[in-house]
Image (cartoon, rainbow, N blue to C red; front, side, top):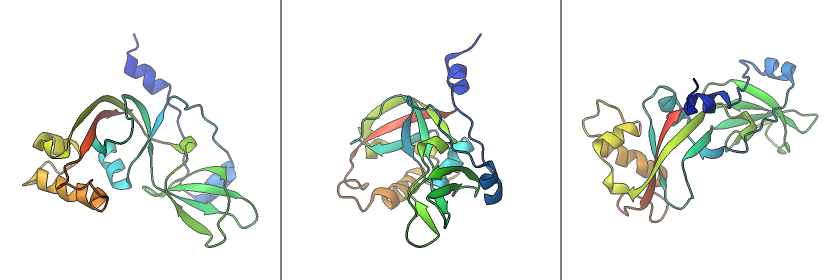
Length: 192
């Protein structure tokens, strides 16, 4: 008997990754995967590692986006490796240095490689099931929630550590820092 979560896992495509640029070029493939039901959630490499290890099961986002329960693909940080002779690039994941797929992309004038904001949707490797979304004020976070955000379980002050992390990301955006106490959406999720 299949559970709903098992059905979700079975519907997620597996992305082939390569340990070297040469392997990726040899494969010379382009992914055109049907992921129209998934939504994007940008995530830093540091947080990707926390999610993969099971230490991060929550994330807070400024409450300006319409975020609802569902399947999200994690937009990892990546680098595009361009070729001199054409308009194709190989995607290189920043987290582990693996390569995946050949994409058509406008080559920058210089340099040969350039940092991209994140991977294209077709190269998503990680998916989460957001099963709960709550609205709250940023300063309503509890110690348990700070730990679920990926703060070290053995921290002497998880709330202070979370404040430092939050302000390092959002502190320069007007009305988004800890002191401003903005409305946030709290996403609780499982890694698929």
